[in-house]
Amino acid sequence: MKKLLLTSNAAAKEVLQILQDEIVVKLKSVGKSDDAWMVVQTQNHDAEDSLLKWGEHLGVKSILQIAFFQGAGRGMVASESIGVGEIALEIPESLIISDELLCQSEVFLALKDFNSITSETMLLLWSMRERYNLASKFKPYFDTLPANFNTGLSFGIDGLAALEGTLLFDEIMQAKQHLRQQYDELFPLLCTNFPEIFRKDVCTWDNFLWACELWYSNSMMVVLSSGKLSTCLVPVAGLLNHSVSPHILNYGRVDEATKSLKFPLSRPCDAGEQCFLSYGKHPGSHLVTFYGFLPRGDNPYDVIPLDLDTSADDEDGTAQSVTTSQTTHMVRGTWLSRSGGFPTYGLPQPLLSHLRAALGCDIDESTTEADIKENDKVVLETILSIFNPMLEALPEQDDSHREGASWDVKLSLDYKDLQRKIISSIVTSCTSALENF
Ligand SMILES: C[S@@+](CC[C@H](N)C(=O)[O-])C[C@H]1O[C@@H](n2cnc3c(N)ncnc32)[C@H](O)[C@@H]1O
Image 1: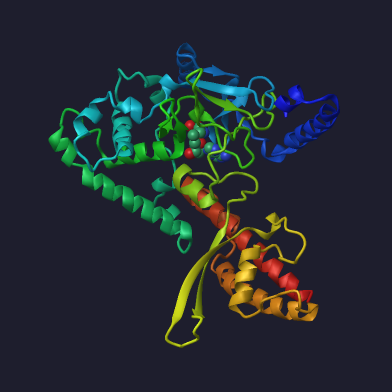
Image 2: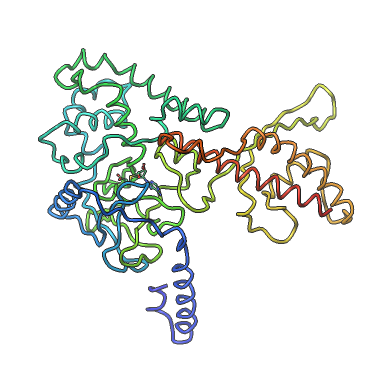
């Protein structure tokens, strides 16, 4: 808009100015209700202050400060009001931890001929060691990293038990099993082959898991100046928390001219307000597993996946030629539905079309209103027959389960509440639609 305003003629300028003002008003209203985070005053900032000083010394430019937030650890706050398009943070490429940096490390030199080890795994092993390297160039960065990440991968027995029966339980178990298998393939083999580099006391399962959680919860995809897309750790920027209505959305390419990674704002951030990044379009289950939190506010990527099997006769109609196909539909909370026009009851149109076809309730221009209602009754009853048992399997928990519960149990209960909220909105939408028929 700013560029257009500079180059347009007077008549167009007037219209563009009105449009820009309207957009700015809309942007300012986004996420306001989610921004009211409580700042915790009583934390020791020494390590974080050293990190900022170290960063500034090496070329970091920032109009953000570090603060502590209840339930989210550290986060970054605007020290002055920052407008759309302004750069909140700029990190020199030389401070980015990527596989390009790895090439100069001992870990790389030792493992480069092990062709089964990917550069991601090498980076993981590098960070596991670097955490304990007193002479590391990145010491101020490693010094500020949490001792425990508390992601889903660290859930204890009680946290997992509280998730039993949910898809998240399977997701976490599979992810953990995969990591354990990876660890067992690497160790003790590497300690035996390279005892100087991979010390037994450093290469423990706990330290390996810590490094995995570091990369899952703190890495970003960055296009480096070489043009290569790499998974990277970005000191200082790694302190930005995530929101479903973030201020920073468009980042991830090192600026050729300045050789730095810039974080421009897509919506304004007032002085003193927490400045949020988008970690990507992740559902709550992914955020719990790999980041250890559920965001505030409505997450449009929270869905209940529905696998539907369809058996259909082939065109020749012979009983022998039956094809089966499986489609997966993602169903969101019906309160998030924005669709107008043809009734969707807050449900995704592809799911309704799929069920209408599968149940022989197809609608075209010639279908009468009475037939549409009769057909939709069958479709809605089918949806209820799927979601009602899901709701029954998630009974409401009273608050006594939360009192004194550990962080993982609380997170599991929050996740189940969220699932229940989505499923119950689907059940309520279908039920009230049927009542109105
Ligand atoms: C990239 S780090 C951000 C800095 C982090 N808060 C810290 O103190 O190190 C990602 C981690 O921050 C936390 N986090 C990020 N966004 C959050 C949010 N909206 N609510 C709660 N925790 C959040 C989670 O623990 C997540 O794994």
